[in-house]
Structure formats: C-alpha cells, structure tokens
Image 1 (cartoon, rainbow, N blue to C red):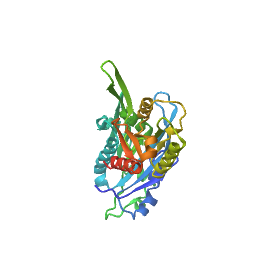
Image 2 (image 1 turned 30 degrees about the horizontal axis):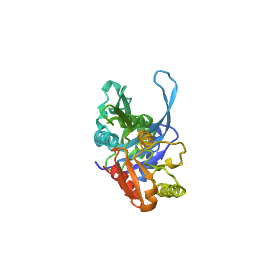
Image 3 (image 1 turned 120 degrees about the horizontal axis):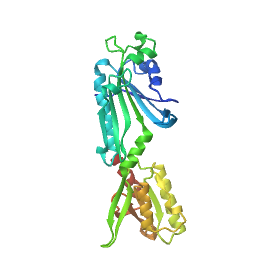
Length: 311
C-alpha cells in the first residue's frame, strides 16, 4: 500500500482528539484526498499503575485517515511497518512481537486492536498500540457535519481512523535492554573475564566515536584531536573528547568504559600520527584494532553509519 502523506504536528498535550480536531484543515492541505496522517509528539501525563498518581512519559502518535473499505488493510500495514521499525534497530529482533487485542479489551469505538510488545527480562510490556476506530469519534468531534468531512473519491463516505500510540520512554528502555551484552573473554587458561558491551545500533548510539591520545601526550597531538573533533561535529558525528580527561587510565580501562557507553569506535592519536598521519581505530563490536590514515577516518565513519541506517 502506498502512503500518501504524513503531516507532522507538535501538540502540547497527548490526545488523538487534537489530531481529529485538525482533520478538516488538514484535508484541504491534501486536496481532500485520502489516505493521509497527522503525527504528534510530546510529553503526556498518564496515571501510574497502582499508585493513581500521574506519570510523565514521552509519547508519539499517528492518526491515519483512510477510506472505510481499506481501514482493516491499513491497520495490518502499519502493524507490519511499526514492527519492522522496532526490529530494524534491535540486536535481538525476536524480542519484539505483536499480538491482536482480545475483543473484551477493545477500547470504545475500536473494532480491532494490535499491540507491539517487548520481552523484557522481567516480562512483556506494551510499546505501541494500534486501533481501528471507525468514524464515530470523527463525527462526534465535528458535531455530525458529514458534508465537511467527506473526501474526494466519488463516494459520500466519512473517513475511518487508524490510530497508533507509542511510549518512547519504554521504547528507549527496550533498546537499552536489548543491546546490553556480557561477552566472555579468556585471557589465559586460568582467567576468564566478562566484557560488558552496549551494542546499540549505530544510528541509535548517542556517541559514535571517542578521541584519545596515547602516552607521551604533546600539544601537537591535542591540536590534532581538536581538528578531528571539529571535523566530526561538522559532519554531525557525535564525539566523546577523551583526550581532555586528566586522570591516568590504561587503554584496557578506557576500552571497557567506552564499550559500556556504547561508543562505536575509539580513535587513538599517537606520535605515529604526527610522523605518518596514521592513527589506530578500535571497533566496539569486534574489539579489532586497525590502522587508518587520518584523511580517511571521517568518510569511513560516515559510510559505516549510513550503511547501517539503510539495512
């Protein structure tokens, strides 16, 4: 199915009602043609389970307007797309799944519902809920004025609504839980160590690269780091300026720290960089170190992140 348009709107409160209220002016923007959607994002206050107190969460939603005869198909379409999106960024995609809402659990005005859930270590929790809501709420909001709600398809029908609501705080927690690994590393016959790695997807990792200086730091090496820092930031590659830290730390401790932070690559600038332009690059995911010329590093990082986003 082809998606025609999604219009992004930032609302100050979290309710599908705000999107339903905006239906008529939005319909004019798309020349009274269906389907189209209104996307919302913002803070939402919801009752906390058990306590009755309100809890603040970051919520995103999409209210999708479509013809009555295709509403069930659109619900299936968005369920596939949303599950595909969650699994795309997951280390263990099978931890994300979907299931149909039972008839007795349907919200008022909804004819079908689907939940996207994540299997946390303590049990399953809902990340997103999708509803096929019919036209009753849209008619109620606009006081039953059918003439202004009709779309241009040759029929005098009122659009049906498919709504999608996601708790992004819980979603972030799901990705963190899904990405944390404890890898065993045998250093000798007597010792067995565990390496904690936050293997966040390259697109989600908040810090892509850490810049550090090898022993014997000089003013020139720091200047190289400053130059790389600016180059990366201009390319929108986030950087951890490890070269500014003053506490003495071994490379093994630094690697362990960056692995737990989820940093994709660690770059070490040394005297060799001054002499030949070569620097050392360590991968978070493989722990392999390789030598690369300083002129190649920005394009290497950019290609790596772009390729991961397009998978």
